[in-house]
Image: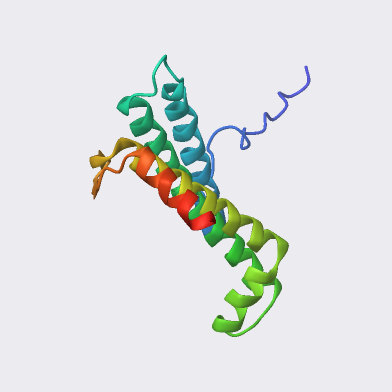
Amino acid sequence: MPPNPEIPTRTSSTKRRASTSIEEEQAAKIKKLGMRIKIKKLDLKPHESLDSSYWRARASVSQLLQEKDVLKKKQSIQNFKFQACRPRGEMSQAWLETAEGKEIVEIMRAHELDYKMCERRLGGSTTIGSITTTTPRKSMRISLRRTDDETL
């Protein structure tokens, strides 16, 4: 009778390693924010009238998108640091001149403008998360009149 063969221990699926690098942690945060954004976007279905609950939900999605943009910006700058060794001030300016830097900044501005638009639509006092803003309510007619006067 042959001796029993040795059975190797399973190492690949028994335990997962804890992510220790900063890049992996940032990627995990971005992924979590992406999932939260998907869940929040489910509330964004426009109803017959775009009431305050719609604009409040849209503002919270915009706020989450801004948080995600900040994390992406940090991650992009971190990757840029490793590619080019420059002093701190020059590095941020050089990053802004790259195609990726320009794209991220444009997306950040778009999400910021979207959030401000939601605030204007809500008018008055708005509470989203822990932020409370107070914006004066202006009628659409007055704002349109001003833009017509400025174009003349």
